[in-house]
Length: 474
Image (cartoon, rainbow, N blue to C red; front, top):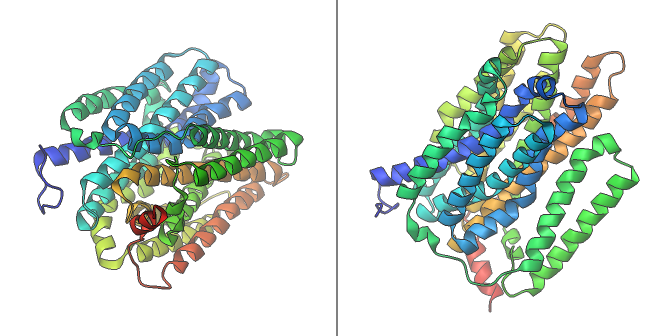
């Protein structure tokens, strides 16, 4: 039996459980970004077309973003530990398959399967933490370590991929396999079985089908929109289809006794701001990262390793400082940290608007990446803390799924917009296209800052989500 999470000192087993959860979220985040540097090698080796190559990335996003809400609620209903272990086993199989395939179709299928597994491991892991550690300093400390692992995995994915791609692109898929196996075996021993406690019984089958179909169709549509055309009949029809499915889902959730997503959770302004904040943080960075990859490799002709090292300052800063964010959140509140982080993100993108034929490492690239690192170190843990505070234990998977869905859907939408801007702007001067695409991320970052500032208008308070839920049942 692990020690009480309210104790000031955590015992070995509690630290071990946290380490397993952090290792898995690190791998999930790593997988989001690590494949990017390897794409040219994958294309050359497997003979993929550009449209097929896009789905090596988009297949993962489709599985992850489309099933996160279902994954989060499934963890609440069927048991977080059980869902976590099964999904992690699927991750191992999908990673091994991705590293051994010899054709593009199977690789894309493996990537989709990995995305599906992450859609269940990520919210299950976060909800295990939020139900293990009491709300306040203990939970903030645990969440800061957990989110630091995720942010570090995402930030360092490009760096690690740069090194592995020099050995061969398959290593970017195979490297996580032994780590995931060790994490799975460790999880069987150290994750507390008391987290098998389930939410109130009842299955919202219609809600599960409609929200999953809506999210899958939405992500698929925005990924395909740049190629199909934003105003094409196919894109407009698909967006309308996603909207209709979402409307049916909302009507269903308002009527069923045991909804998949209790809509009352969205009455909390803090939770809504946290989800909007992650849409903007993750979306604007994914768009910027895509542009930066094109700029460094295709315009400046840097190698995969040189490109990866350009992102190293941001990754190191996140890895070193994010674990301290829990104590800072206790002292200053999440709202102030998110506002400062949003300002740093806007400053970083504004700085990168100065990109030219000969960018300065000392005055542009390194300072810009440092600002990106500051933004993630401050904002990412704080958004996770804010999104889960005040939520009942049996809805922590739901809150986690909502937050992760916001990030993934935001990333898919912004990436699609940035891709469209990048391919339709610039003419004879590629720099014009880079500047226009980065402007999209910069504008979003400013919007994120404005959203964050609205949370500072009144003293921070714990969102009364539990109390509102009780009122709903009266």
